[in-house]
Image 1 (cartoon, one colour):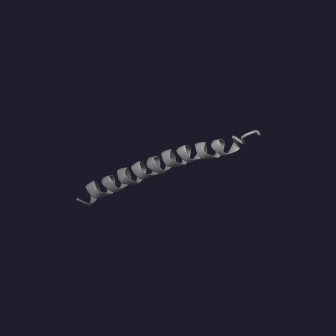
Image 2 (tube, one colour):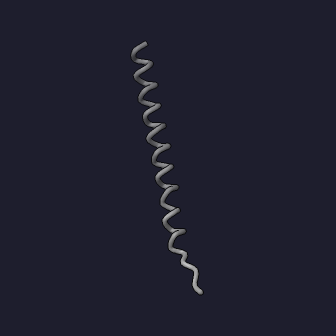
Image 3 (cartoon, one colour):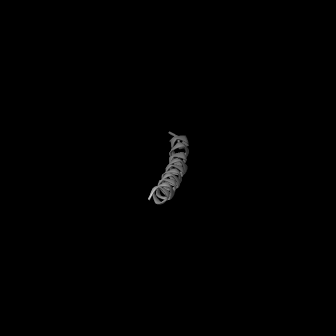
Length: 40
């Protein structure tokens, strides 16, 4: 019997997605902080 290892490659894609989400979160926080300083 041969085990299929194709499913493992698909899991790798999630890491890139998480990194991108973290970058967007950091970006949004940075912008909100800048606007907060401007409002004050």
